[in-house]
Image 1 (tube, rainbow, N blue to C red):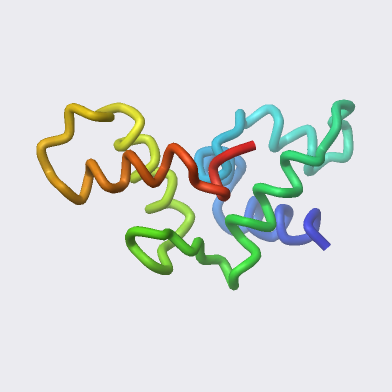
Image 2: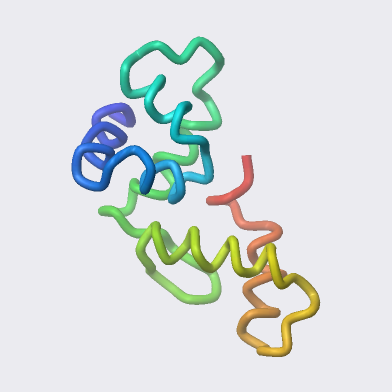
Length: 105
């Protein structure tokens, strides 16, 4: 079940790192883990399954199978640099990240 996966990741990495990897706030992660999150968890469930559901790896269309942390870092970099990227790989990441099923939602 997704909540056990989330709790396991929080236990191993801490809520701050998991929040970074999921692209959510730390307080959201804390509330969900404690069972006190009152809004819909549909988007959170989708992200947990997409990011941690492949034995703790993310399938990136550009880089292949990568860690959730590397995914979060590359996604943030691509968003920050955007079309100004001089590196072809970064530009490809930017274009791919915009439509990434893992990061959307």
